[in-house]
Length: 132
Image 1 (cartoon, one colour):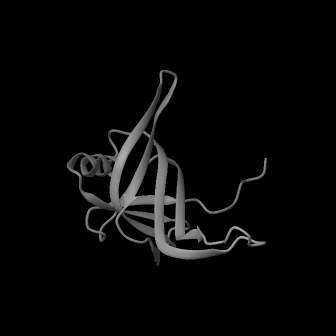
Image 2: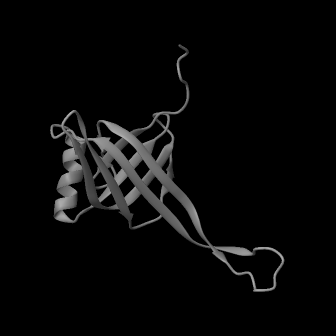
């Protein structure tokens, strides 16, 4: 079987945006970066007209629960305290995106025969920043 090539991600969490702790066992992440769009077409227009609005930065991710992982524990502590965190997603070890916001909550999926899975959504408080 051939090896699958392509970008893989690593995720880090920081309380101040300077020093990041790796978040282990991340299964997947969904990022939405860009601007909101608004339909401004009139009723009789022959095509849809849109304009762009404010920037948006949406992030959610799924990970396997690991109570011994420092990164996951940092996320849980910030969620419990209602503190903002920085989340860094890197595609290739260097390039990626940084989000800032509140870990709004976690949905846990528990199964007696499989690892516990946690889904988290970030409530962004500023536009995403591309790195390096």
